[in-house]
Image (cartoon, rainbow, N blue to C red):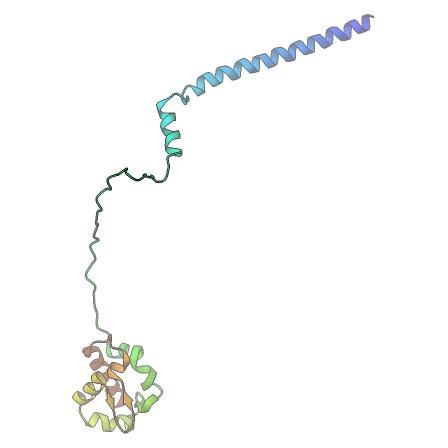
Length: 170
């Protein structure tokens, strides 16, 4: 029997130490919670405001007969900088608008650099060439749409392109 008694004593000692250790952990946890949970309690105004903000409805519903004044609309106007308009040069206009026809001779258009095709046209004078390029022209050889179909180009830009093409033909 002494053996059983020794086992029972040892078993009781181990259980007692474990119980004391668990009690120490419980007391330590309660002390830590008191120290840290004092900052955010459910009764604190800061906590209540945070919860109210999280569950705040997105919009409001008003029943018939209830009126809510709407805030006056505000109009904000942004100051836009003045657009800087720069005229394109003759070669730029040629590459942007004239190349399609005058590069391949489409519709009877004289090809850039072909002196023989440009000779009769240049003989009419630069003012006539500018007029035909700006206002359009239908002749026996071909058709020239007004401003080459690019109505967004200015008369000065078209004149610069005509001067460039005539200069390349000489």
